[in-house]
Amino acid sequence: MESLQTIIATCAPEAGLSSRIIPFASGTSLKERLSANPVLMAPMAGVSDGVYRTMARAGGAGLAYSEMVSVAGIHYGGDKTWELVEPLATEPDIAVQLFGSKPDQFKEAAAQISERLGDKLALIDINMACPVPKVVKKGEGSALLDTPELAADLVKACLSEVSVPVTVKIRRGRRQDEEVAPEFARAMEAAGASAVAIHGRFATQMYRGQAEWETVNRVCDAVSIPVIGSGDMLSAEAAAHALTETGVTAVMIARGTYGNPWIFKNTQALVEGQPVLVPTLDQMLASFMMHVRLLDAADIHIARARSLSTWYFRGIPNAAYWRGKSVKCVTAQDFIDLALEIKETVKRLEGEQEFPEHNLPMS
Image 1: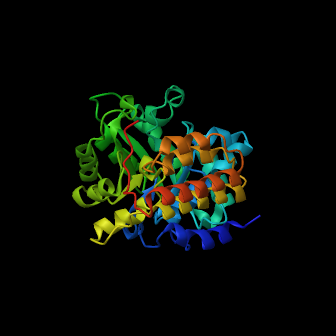
Image 2: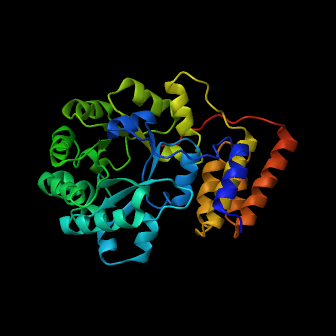
Image 3: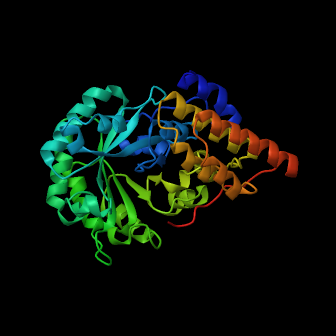
């Protein structure tokens, strides 16, 4: 089987991605490090595995986050929990996002993660934003917005065990029209948090409506630590606008990465006034095939490629037909053969063409 490094070296250039994954920037402060490359890949449940993070880093992400990791899962020694934490050999470093509500479990998890990952641990982030009912009902995720004292204790618990920055991710507030983000962010700064990521929706909104960026600016005004903007980063244009028109130090991109690993480099290009890369059909399919090969080499369930096909094939002529065929794919080679068939068919019918960067509909 091909090694992960070989796949990146051979496939990335064809996909318009970098074959050299750059570590998280060095610097004397987290703000300096974030400013060097302020475009980050957000934690996404069921998405942010090691291969997805690797693709994001090859696409120019300054740093990529793990999925939400349960501190209770680490406490009880779950192997599946550790699978969410462990970086691949291709990853120079990783940000690990934790969730839970018990300070002693955060302390234990931080210590174990620090020992296990060593220099590959870039920072620990605490999720205080997740709106999912099964998380909130346990007093975790966005429920912590109602208990700032407990939230501060979680930050302090992690800081007692690690030398890397500890950050938090929050929302505008837990309930509609009850904004607590600025005051809450100040409490997290006082507890020792090195940065705060803010999603400009209330938890009860889930992902409905639009993120409210005036809230993000109010958080920026409230604290002296870096603020990372989150919400509706569905295109490089949206991410670049947040970086240039608000007070954030960095942005965290989630759904905008779907089928679009170029979004990181393109955001940087727009901020710097440089040309963006508009992926050709060849590059889109090469990126998809690279992703599939990496999944196979990393022994990650190939069924994830079905979601990838939905994202990567968007905008291709007869996309619905091709997505239907992808459902029948069973092996990595099946997905690769499908991509090659698409390439041959589309080029035969329409010739070489470019597909502009795509925005996701709201979900």
